[in-house]
Length: 341
Image (cartoon, rainbow, N blue to C red):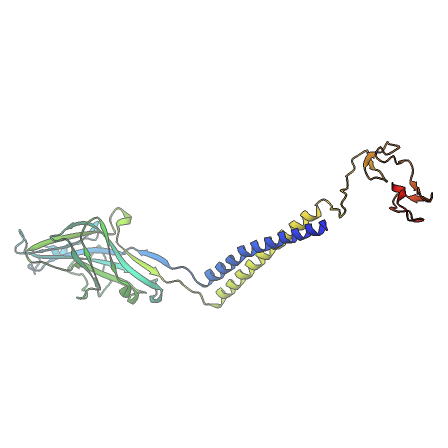
């Protein structure tokens, strides 16, 4: 009965191990299968390949001041500026706006979840609490920052694609350009950034960090969130199936190792008796009394516990007098147990 109880306990042990193993394997299988069919979305930060700003004075059509010939491609800022017949510039209508080009050639339209232009405002001299800064789409992306001037700058659309108010300097500002970036995926995209509102008799300046600024963190960037990519070609599907099978096989191998390890523990365990009397192990130089079963020295002639003659190989039945084996529990001749009394 005791042996059966131990075996039952051992079976419960194995069963609990199997349950724990299944709790480990099942999430692995689910995770492996899920991750093999879809990848997480990715955030891309694209720096402009070129950026610069251009300047003109609308009251100087022949460019006597030479503003339209100025190239700013190596400067560390992008200057949005207007001076509209302001104090000290009563004869001027100065305007400047910035150009930025981004390479979208490695992106497809379906990949793009969202896209935002991020720019860091280094310095601002505004006459109001806030001013709107507009982003327009340019018609060309063939210009280069080290050769761009107002004279050769590409034109741009009159309607802005995004407008964001700016106020405090030393802050980041963003413009949502998701639709525009999707429409221009697979090619280059040029954006034109300018102060939207021009007030008469006024002058305002907003300087954003350019890609030449020393601190890389402050450089303008196009932040694009790409959609998860699902692979559907046949070879990738086969690789997913192989991955799932490998996970199952690995899990089965762990279960077998645990089972064999437990079997080894069982085989090395002490033997269990089913009798109520505990078997006493014999040590070197000892023997068990054939009558009472207690350990005695091999040198003893008589058992000190039951007075059994240890030199005899047989017992004499006290009832019928017949010689009987010491291994017998009852006398086979008369059925008496008196030989062991």
